[in-house]
Length: 244
Ligand SMILES: [Zn+2]
Ligand SMILES: [Zn+2]
Ligand SMILES: [Zn+2]
Image (cartoon, rainbow, N blue to C red; front, side):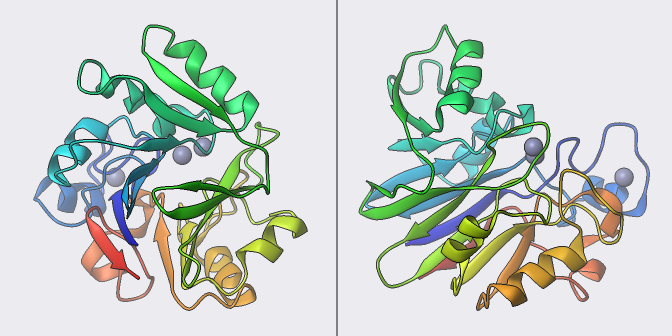
């Protein structure tokens, strides 16, 4: 399987409108601090998107993806679903997957689109593009059931935490153990965050789960320019690829 981090930014992303901090200036000058909003592309026998970033059109064009075999949504925050409208007239009846309350909320917004709805139960694996996916409950107020995603090809495992703070339920942690890659929400280097993890918490999670590799996503401009910050932290960047 191949994993591409299509978008590694937080909700306002980098550069943030109106901000002149060093990360935002590096982003404006074409550096890797330039981040689009959250989305991950999974490739097996086809393409699955984890979340549909508001920047999805540009992301699919730059990754040269012409057809998507499924969309899995982690939670109904604008920065994770708004780009579903970019399928308008480009692809009909896209298969969409998620837990009931997430699908209810997002599909209510996209009443004018065509789609094929698949309600998924937490912790019950399902197959897509020759890979096994499992939705794991995480903690991202105010949502009762935001999810992370476990992806496995039977041999290798990738965990995407989705948006979460460090209080991940025990049942989910068990299913996140020993991953080959942990793609972790780490919005800021040091702040105490209510809805997200910071860098130290994301690193601690990777250690606790014995992940072979941890990479940060949902990265805010607080880290400073990417090339400097990535010497200290395992920051992902838009277009970063992993193959297993
Ligand atoms: Zn900034
Ligand atoms: Zn969120
Ligand atoms: Zn988010």
